Length: 403
Image (cartoon, rainbow, N blue to C red):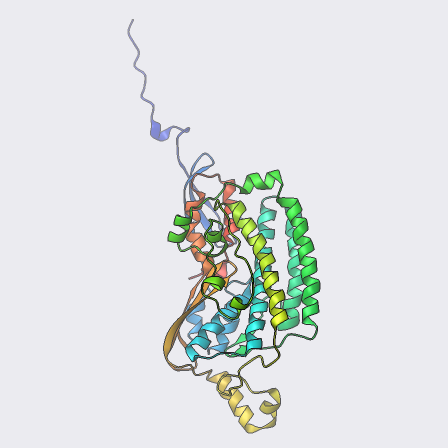
């Protein structure tokens, strides 16, 4: 009997082994309107992920070179708009280091207090949205309620909720309002109750744990090699925090812990941020207890704007105001890099001055930019559905990532 030859199986076109290339975003509701994931998939398993961060067309760093030093402050609000006060403080600290200027103690405490309140609002935004994307929409609503409570504090101090433009080179715009400590006490009581409710809803929730635990894992060695900092790095077990490693303001005068994880997965990232909110409230309460009386800005007509009564009441005050607004603070030539602990990690400003009233060069180290660089590595071997939870824990902010 003659044997009939069987055609060879074409492995390259076998549907069971074919690799599919898929583009996810930027129109996907979870990708913030700018991000695109170029995926290579085996079924739903991710073989490779190339992340495109896209553009918001802000040109932050070049815009700053056309403005005076204090005119840059509103631009910093738009970097990480979930925690704008930290951006304000970081830029002011860098400019003041070029000036070799030490601001009054009360000003430094106020900056620290407002930075930590802003850190909590950032974490509430991140965790609330991440929980919502995992299906726990009630947690999202609860955390937004807590965030609004803190936004009331921010508005009471700065006059704005989001784009606060609060710092100036040499100080801050407003002192804390009367009774602010009592306002903080009431707000934190409410926030702690909400966080306790969210903890009960999530920490032992089988669905949430299955979606987050063991997903998006990255080793501490890989995280360090990518330049990842903040909660993403601390979730791997590395206790690096700029506030401890290179203390600025008065962080060396307050007691707080640096939460860390063990696995470097999404669940650890969630719990690290969750615990950091408790530590931030500890810092604020200690800082309020240590808050001294005194001025909130330096008394130097070359740096600080004169009082309104002088602007309207005498020619010297009017001229001083005009020159500071139009020409800017004259900062001596030099260059400096100043890091602070942003909500997503090390936020640094590199400034170059040529002696004029405008920055010669401005560069910013955006913490979530490095998290986005490592995202492709985190997603390898996981499923398409895991992109949502992992990307949510990166807490990508488009205003920072836009280069």
